[in-house]
Image 1: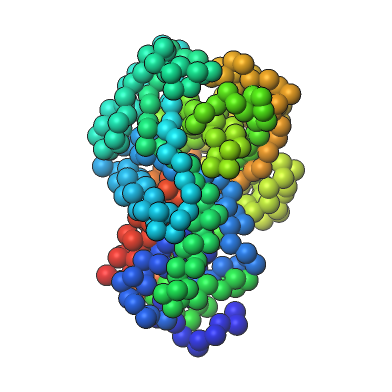
Image 2: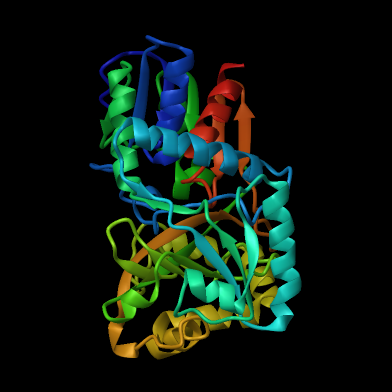
Length: 383
């Protein structure tokens, strides 16, 4: 690996948001420790941490008392404080979760209950008329307003975290790929390897990569969305469907969707990596998941390749949207642990073996919660 020291006290494998936040938390607890962050790519933010919509979640969706709910709330507060400290711009623009039919109202009521139980400040249900005061061009029968939701550029956060780690004496080493954790010359190791986490852990858990494609909305249709507009999600399926984000740079994106990917770290729709494809296609979990959610999955795939179909779904929320203003945008790939029985693991998943701690599953809201996750992981490693 060409490391500068023959031995480190602490090492973090993976230079994404969770990895760098963990390194920062370790150095807060062990000032002066010899620490290295090992990132295989030549630059930060090549994968999940640099390929997201930039939403700072408030903690609405997650079951009260779950690790997700707790860490999202703690992480949001810590993230915005970190942004203030480092002069990173963000916008607390608020979110509408919109029910377009009466069938969705029981699920919306459950989200209202969860928001209150999780301590989300200022959340309340709005009538159709009240909803249009927040988002004049959005239609629905009722909505849940979440004023605490925000947007930020996580690539800037990522660079600030790296600078902070280095200012505390840690090393952030780019172009240092780890293929076996036993090779890392450190007394204690945290593995935050994202899309490669299952391979480095070597456990029974298997990541199924899901590609999410964004649609970019140009003016004048972009002017139809002020902040964040989301659908009422299916609580059994950990993806959110069509939603709109006005990003911190003013661009408006819709999505991402979620379709199985045959390449973990390549982002074209046609990308295939033989090892990744083989592992996905030989996973019993993917077939059980497909049987359970075939209708949802077919819709996701159809809207992924047919822009007109995606826009038709988007018009359920923003009827004035014009097809000619919508184009295919960037893509990301989500690392999602899928069990053999077809269950998508929906919470954070850590595994410890002696002095090595693996972060195997860190789905959304991991970006929002990165500082809180890092603090928990650091405490666990140093215990």
